[in-house]
Image (tube, rainbow, N blue to C red; front, side, top):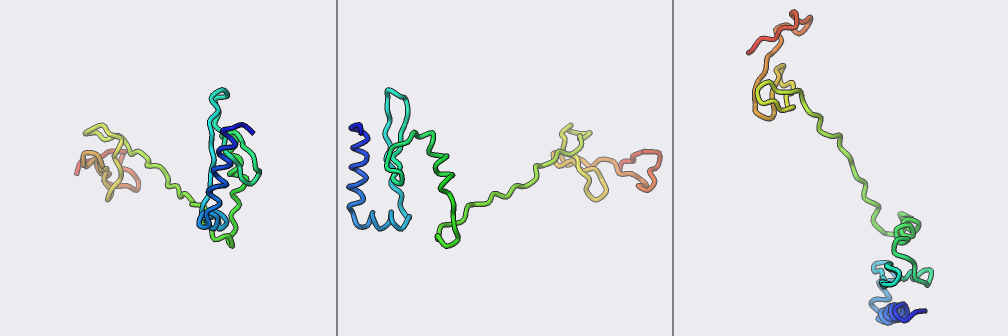
Length: 135
């Protein structure tokens, strides 16, 4: 094992010598990580305590995903569920300001950008020759 790698392992062993640290690590409330950067390779490596050797940092995410099995009895919080909302749909083009913010409000065309009230259809069923009359 190379000298920087050995130093990382020794430091981890020293930290595990403290009763409080050992207790928290064994209770899975604390995780110790050991990293070192190899300039010649241009890579970072992390010490994997479960496997007992260093792995390239780019492989860490895959390793974490493989170990991320959470059981209800583990006492760990459940993964956060992201709720998505539908995107805001643009309205029709406003005749006054040109913004696409005109919506139907109380039977009238209302621009949420400038507040302009558009025309209202005189009779909606059936349409009166498609004409609009200003209120």
